[in-house]
Length: 158
Image (cartoon, rainbow, N blue to C red; front, side):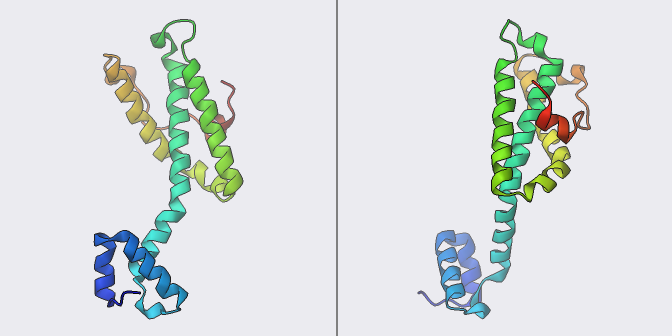
């Protein structure tokens, strides 16, 4: 193992992340706790803890976007099959969330608290979709606050 002082190890975090992780892992294994880059390590652990929650938020945003499209823009999509891809997307995202809940049960209590974040993302995507269809998003009054409950997002029949 390469010997570095604490400052060099901190700098390595930005310069060569895999090596930084390797060295910190070795320091932990050898119980050389005073040499570990604790600030960056704690930040990394915090990020790891949030990764699956962020994934769930992204899936909720997809569901919100497509529920809103089904409720408000199905006529714009046109045709007999209008909305089928949105329904499939909603179902797929629900499955992904349920699987993550099986793996990480603590997400069940955290995800309902993240509806505002998910709605913000969904709103932005709805605005882009409208613009891509040569429509002015301001004309459609997409609500600032999420119009759906978590229960509805996860269980409403589509």
